[in-house]
Length: 174
Picture 1 (cartoon, rainbow, N blue to C red):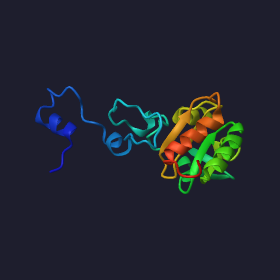
Picture 2: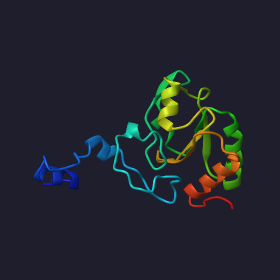
Picture 3: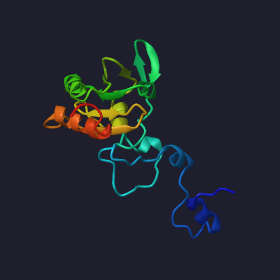
Picture 4: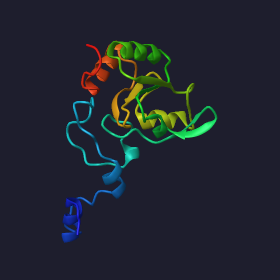
């Protein structure tokens, strides 16, 4: 029989266990990926959480939300399949993304929220990704959040390029 540590302690003595078992959805889908390719992941190893509680934190899977693209209803997860994706409401990030793309020669696309895609609920989108109208979220091709910034950093091009360089393990030009 398979039993996780949290279940084993609970099964032996449910009343004595000071921690309830971790929710199944949290265990299966709420993991936090740690790597040098994930920037700003918390270092204190929090327990798994349900995916909706991570709020787009680097090292977690990008959250699922419904969007409309060219009249079609799609999931945010449909965006993350072939290349790096930079999500932002601010068109200024297109310029920074293009500069970083040229410098690193990586396949990256800016998805302009409100223009390229429309979220069903813009506030829910911001909350789910942990960004403001001026912030950005960088998502790897496998759907994991690599980096995010709540607001525009003082040097957004440099911040994005540095993040991409680290998250891609220095692929592209130096």
